Every structure is written in C-alpha cells, then in structure tokens.
Length: 283
Image 1 (cartoon, helix red, strand yellow):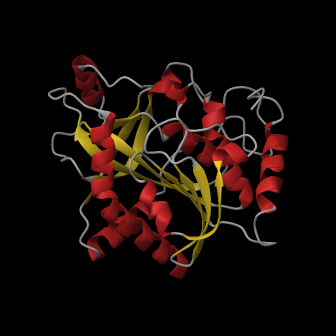
Image 2 (cartoon, helix red, strand yellow):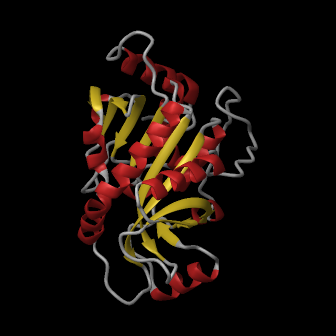
Image 3 (tube, helix red, strand yellow):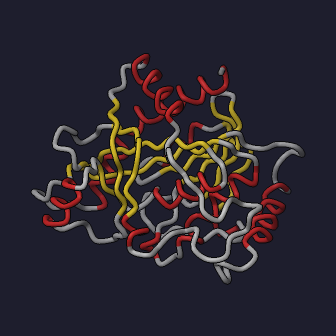
C-alpha cells in the first residue's frame, strides 16, 4: 500500500475510480457494512451487483483471518444500495491502522453516509450471555491510549478536520431505531460499552478484571479505529457486537468457538440489520 501517510486523498480517488469501472454509472452505496468474525453470511443476503476480492482492490490489504472472506460486495439489501465488507482487516495482522481503515475511507468516498459495523466480542458484563447482541453506545480506545490512532500523521482537510470531536461515536437515532426493530422482531438486544485491545492473544484474568472496573461491557480487537475514521469523515455509525463468549477469565477461549458462536447468532443479526435497512429506506 506504500506510505500510509502519503497522498491519502489521491489513493482513495484512484481506488474509487477502479471500483466505479465495475458499477453502473451514477450508482453509489447509501450504507456501508463491516462484518466481523462468523458474521460473513449476511453478505449472502445481498442482491449482488459485483463482488471484488480485496486482492483486486488498489490499497486494500488482504485479510488472513479464518472466517473473513476478504471481499467487497456491492449491491442492494432491503432496497438500499449497500457496500459490504465481507470480513475486515485487523491491526494484529500486521497492518497499520491507516491500512485497516482505508476501506472505510473508500466506502465514504463511494457515497455511503451511514456505516453499520459488527464484531464478535467477549462479554465482560456478568449480566450478559453468550449469543447476546449488544448495541454499542460508547467505546474505550485502549489502542489510542497506547499511541495508536488511525488519524495520526498529516491531515487532509478534504477528508475531515485535524481535531475531530467524534462524540457521540454511535448515532443515538440509529441505536433507537435498532431497538425498535428488535422489539418488533422479538430479538433481545442490550446496550453497552465496547473496549478494544490489540490482540491477537486473548486477555489475562487480571486484565479482564481491570476492563470490567473501567466500565466496559464487551471486549474485542476491532471496530473502534473504523468508527473513528467514519466519524472523522462525517458518517453516522451503528455498532453491533455479537457476544460470542463470556470473557470472565474462567474458561479457555478459541477462535473456532468465536466463529461458531458468530454463526449461531447470524440469523438474528441478519434479521436486525435487514430491519434497520428497511426502516432507513422508508424513513
């Protein structure tokens, strides 16, 4: 991808130009979606216009994590034009945060004004259960505390202001809309705070105790940097965590278990996202 700080605007424009060659003239997504571990099947619900492997998209790094297909799916879902990242990129794969968030920049430049981001997360709130869906209402950016932020480096004012105030990171109206859809479809959802750790090793018992004391309800290895960039670019964000395990330090955790739990929750997540898109279409 080259220098992560060099001519970001130009690289975005070149990538959008390449993708536009595969799309009807004037077509653009209204909503971007990022699908986390085990949640890729949602992309199969899209009426596909074109699907492009990340390896064929200039500037996109390749995902190396099991359960992340690594392709951009463009089409319609519930009558809404969507751009779906079927699998995301992670900091722990060795990519810079600028590389990890470059696709969000591209989704915005393609025309998406709303981002729905999903993830698999460990439950820290003892009132949660494996398989719960949590609407993210705020986050704690441990990577940022450690000196890693996707907005570091030169700022291009065409992409967003130098010092953005991204509060609230997750749009209150979208959260309320998701809760309305959940009630109508008998889907249990919770609200909570998501905290990011770098990974890829799972957390120690002492770390989990500390994260709970800080007020986090769920912990994961993604999402926050994507949300920072989306808000920097002026997008509205809805974040949904699938609680794939209870991160209380009592039982060992494997990525295979996380994927399995993600697949189990898939039908409910698909219902929720489809319902939100339906409401956005008729709003």
